[in-house]
Amino acid sequence: WTITPALILIFIAIPSFMLLYSIDEIVYPQITIKVIGHQWFWSYESYDLFESNLKTIYQYDSYMTPTDEINDGKLRLLDVDLPLYLPTRTHIRILITSSDVLHSWA
Image 1: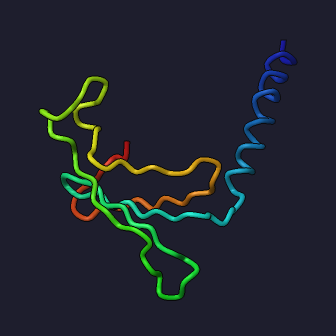
Image 2: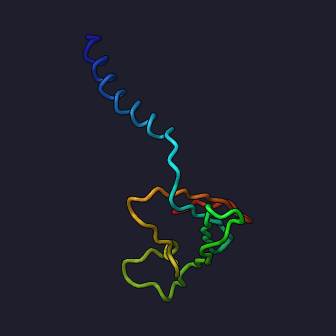
Image 3: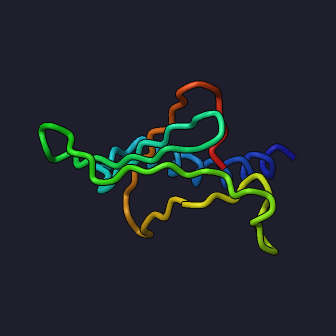
């Protein structure tokens, strides 16, 4: 009766170890985004890390959409006026911080 649970654990452990190893691999990101949470809005910044002076590529603030402007299918407290769009199949580093309050980035 001990062989079956052992095989199940091995069957679960092998993919888990592969995933743990892949998490530790350091991949140089192609894009670095700094997300700053403020009390009522988010700030997004992207830097050119190849420049020695860290030149800002873009920077903007994203505010919540007012309740009277929300269309059908939008979430009341999660919809913003300028959402952050990121490319697919790209290594991206996201640095999340807060200026005045603790936030959850949804």
